[in-house]
Image (cartoon, rainbow, N blue to C red; front, top):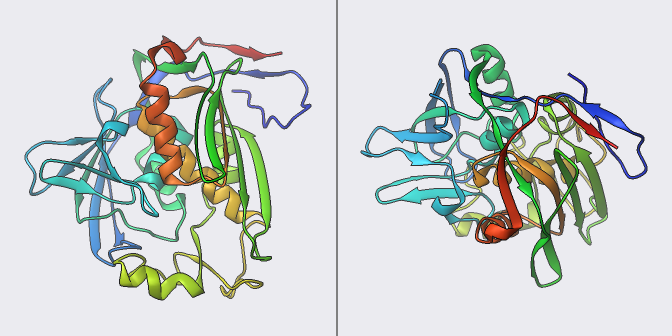
Length: 307
């Protein structure tokens, strides 16, 4: 399989796409603590039939909960899904790992209100999928091809989808007054290898000055140096520092990929955001999916060429 990490001005490149749906071969169990709830959670990632999508199953709820934009109930510092008596928070890192590795169908059995934070990245989910092994099934994989620009904006921030020849390109820019982050922009065209190398292990980040306020709102109750890059205006508090010089924008891209997975199929297009977050990401998906003229749903060809 060939892959391109396509920056502006990059040369012609060939991509051999996954044309068939994927799940996992066997169940794998995980447990940990939620970064916002500080509550323990156990989950099992299990195989699912073709065309199932990503679904959450609960010990105390009758019906499974689909990972789709129509089930988003909160986007405050994380993405929360809910319907009737079922809800689950902080789903974006798992969904990002599914999208990054090309997992279309998965049953997520969870006992707890929130997915575990682990180290604040998607790395634990990637490791779990490697243990479970990814399985390709005969059914064709379909993609949402962006046909026309779709844009949402708020208070100087924006998120938009633009058409592209093929594949998903993420163009994410953040802009913080604090010198420890500043202005960072990253552009990547995604496949599994790029996701593993560039995004999977980029961690959540936050400013120490905001911690008390967030905890008063019932957020970040489980935050620690084990699962968050803790920042002052001009310094990183974690003893080992950062994993990448631009880890913050990489994590924003990781989050965006997870939120885009709520469209229900891989997206072929460009996703661009400036000073975005979960709220804008989901709003952009909602705007795209609410305009049937802006996208088409089609099978992914076996081979595609960027020119």
